[in-house]
Length: 315
Image (cartoon, one colour):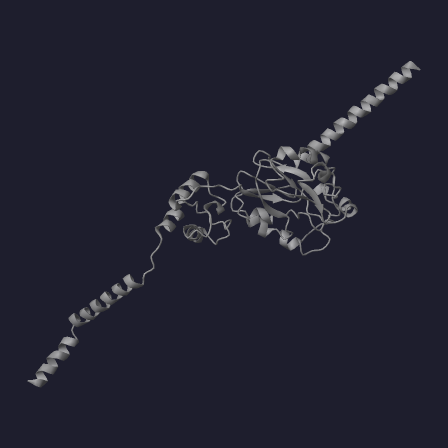
């Protein structure tokens, strides 16, 4: 009987039923392990992620919206750090987190160069790679080694189509711009920064040259010549450092743009310009200033002609 029992046992081990039992045992083991080893996901992460716009632009300094949602849920980042977030979504995330919604002044891209092609001196024909990055590797393409190259790397990098190249100069659409910062990294000359729009419009320095006044005049018609007139007109806000005008945007010194009007008017090269949602082209301010100067010169000439005619008549 023993051989028959062994033969029967061997038959049972080889049957599909036995394999099914083994599979069932492993399934039970894996299920237990899953429940014991699983990491609990904070439901707020999912809720915050659903409230985010999903742009994945990186403007919050996180790789994407998933990582930012985790940072917000763990209270490592404020909801307002999302540069694309609207007021309604901000309030929604604040309600999810049980905190007060506080929106910071949005950051927007600022181009620190105001020279169109005809305002740049010493330009030579360039036939290389049609990118700013490639052009920047070639010496002598234009006299100003700080200014915009105008081939549009910043516009190509913008995921929101907020930058347009007009006559070799980027124009930012402040309605479309989200402040993601992609253009900042794309500019090989570092002339783009993100500024908090503490007022709209905002006065900015449309120049990056750190050359002395004589060199700047020789390379650009609208560059900052470090004359200091702005600082004398509004010393608490403006200063000249390294041959370039600077603006202090802290709330104590820059309360509103209207307070800076005296300094803006004093700038002889019109490198202090206004940017904002209602200003389509900040560089039109140069043309406006030229028209004003021409009108004043014409009025002065007319007055002199009249005075000379009256003097001649009296004689």
